[in-house]
Length: 246
Length: 246
DNA sequence: AAGTGGTCTAGACCACCGA
DNA sequence: CGGTGGTCTAGACCACTTA
Image (cartoon, rainbow over all chains, first blue to last red; front, side):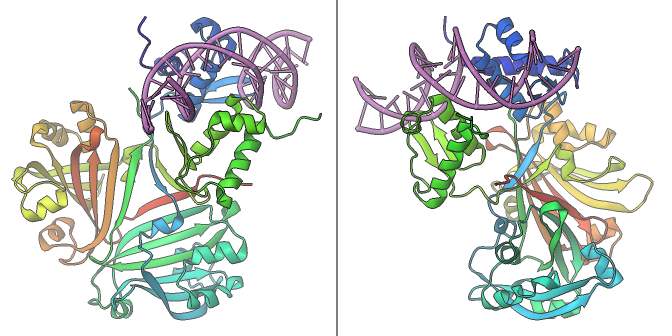
C-alpha cells in the first residue's frame, strides 16, 4: 500500500480532464454532482470539490449553486501569461530617471490625432511634451507626449514639480483607477523635431509605443506616445505557460 | 443571529489583508499559523485555509510546508496581466500568411551571435532565414531568422513543406513543451541585405523582435529574430488589472 | 522530535434553483 | 419541494522543515 505520490484530488481532476477531452462530457453539458462523484470514486465530497476547483481554475468548468457543474471548454489549451506587479514595470525604467516637461498646451484633435487618440475630431485634450533622462546623464532615453482630459489640468503642476508617472497622478488626484492598459508598438523614422530633442539623426530608427490608459467602464483616461531611439531601450516581456500538465 | 452576508473566510481574508497593508505583518515576515488563527478567530482550520487560499491567489502570501505562510507583497492592488490563449497569438498574424524559407545553414556562434543567442561562442546552431507574406501579396510582412539546435534538423523538412510555426514543430516532433517565451523589442535600422528582401530603403526604421523559446528546466529550445518594417506591423498587448478590490 | 502546511474524512447547515 | 453547490466544523494522518 505505498501511498500514491499524487494526491487523490489531483488524480480525480486528471481523470475528469481526460473524460472531458475524450468527449465523454460535452461542452455545455453538466458534470456529475459532487455527491455522485464522491460516491463513484470513493472519496469525500471535499476531495471532489478540490478537484473541481482545479478544473475551474483552468477554465474548464463553471459552477453554479443550485444548477451544477457545467463543462466550459474541452481543453485548457495552453494559456500564456505575462504579469506586471505594478504599472510602472510596464516602462521598465529604473527609478533613477527624471521627467522633464518641455511644453504644455491644449489641443483640439485633428483628423490624424483623433485616430491616434481614438476620439472624435475636435475633441479637446491637454498635451504635455516630455523627455525622460537617466539621472546624471544628458542624453534622454525617450521622448513622450502625454494626453489627458483638460479637466485634469492640475496634473501639470504635479508633473512639473515631481517626476512621477502620469497614470499615478490620475489615480491619486482624480480617484480613477487604471483598469487596463493597451499598448501598441511599432517602428518609426524619428521626425527631425523629435530627433533633435533626443540627440539622434533625423529619420533614424525609433520605437514608437502608444499606450491607452483605460479606467472603469472602458473610460479612456489618458494616452501616451513614446519614442525610444535605437539602442537606448528595449522592451522585454516574459510569457509563461500557466498550466503545467503531467 | 442573522448570518453575515459575507462568509467568514472572506471576512478573515479581508482582515488579514488590512493587517498586511497596515504593516502589522511586514513583507517577508511569517503570518500566524493556521492553528493560531483558527484559535484566535474562533473558526475551523479549513476556514483559515480558505482565507489563505484567497490571499495566495492574490499573490499576497506564499506558503511552504514545514515553514509557514510568508507575506509576499504589501498590497495586491496593481497586478496587471496580459494573456495569450495560444502562443500563435504572440505573432498576431492572421492565419492567412505563409512562410517562405530563403536559406538554411549550420552556423557556429560568433561573439556577436553568442550574445544574441545567449550561448557560448562556437556553439553550433541550425539557422533558417525566412520571410512571412500575407497570402496573395508580394510584400513580406517580416523577415525572420530562426535558430534551433542541429539535432532538430528534421524540422527544416516540415518548415519548407508547410508554413507552420517553428515552436509548434519543436513541440510536435521533439516532444518538448514551450514553457516560457522571453521577448525583447527594440528599434533598428534595417541593414541593406534585409531591406532588399523586405522591399524597403536600406537603414530605414524597423522593429526588431527577439524571442527566446524556453522549455522545461530552463532549456533554451529555439531563438527567433524578427524584423518588421515600419507601418506593416504593430505589436499590441493589453494589460488588465487582475484584482478588483472593494 | 516538534511544528508547519497538505491532504482527507464524515458529518452539518445554508442559499439558490428548477419543477 | 428536493437537489445543487457554498460554507463550515472537528477531527485525522502525512510530508516537509528546523532544530
